[in-house]
Image (tube, rainbow, N blue to C red; front, side, top):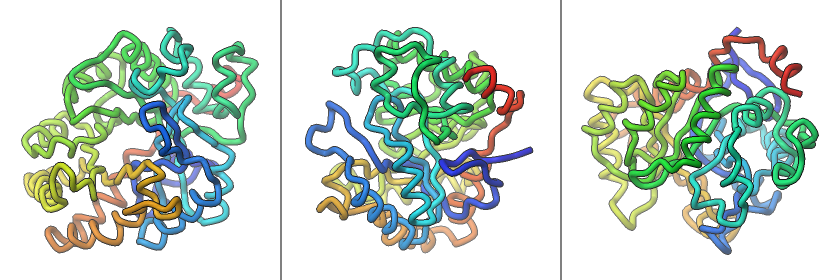
Length: 328
């Protein structure tokens, strides 16, 4: 049976509506001091802005050790009516300078599989001191696996995470997101994941538009993977028009079914409910209408409705109930 695993349980893929494929409701990192997303009421207000802008669902892309609050995310999903998919995995090494355990851990497969099938840790700090089977779990299961790699680099620690993601994906069929720096090493990480049993059709390359090169993006799509556009509103490097033209070039080359759209606003200084700008609603309020005008409503619906529903659908080789029993 096809399903998408959300923080409130499994739902049919067709029930998602418009999906923002990459945001964060809670997050903290030593790379972003003072920009923590850590207030449940404010994050809930920001989620309500996203819904008001025309989206129905989102992937909360915060992985292990970076301020996740799974039970709070479930409460916000209930309160707002938003469908939210939670994430397990580990980001690139640079985010864990204050968590040596996350850099030293060698076996990630069992941990990730447990978070997908049994439950996300109630406190990620438990992983530093507690045997896996004794780690307290929340009432939420993850629906996406995430890894991070650095600029033209896959460190030994990042490779161990990718190996664990391969193991967890083969066991469950859960989809995979890969953080890249300026879309560097995208083809290389797809090749590595394929060697670990993760076919490109189950992978999205996040932040592809931070290198707005449609030729590269088409190559990613041709591999079978999804191209993640999530840089709307980041005008410091290039205007939205450049991202729109890059996305349009990919779509007009025949690869619209391989594009996902988000914004990765990701910081308190960028969330309106925390006193910043442009807010989670910028994508739906400002960027999507321009995309519809450049392409058409049907193509944009492919990008924000049909593609994420397909990407988020688990291709399970084993009963997840059986796996939950085996990994609990």
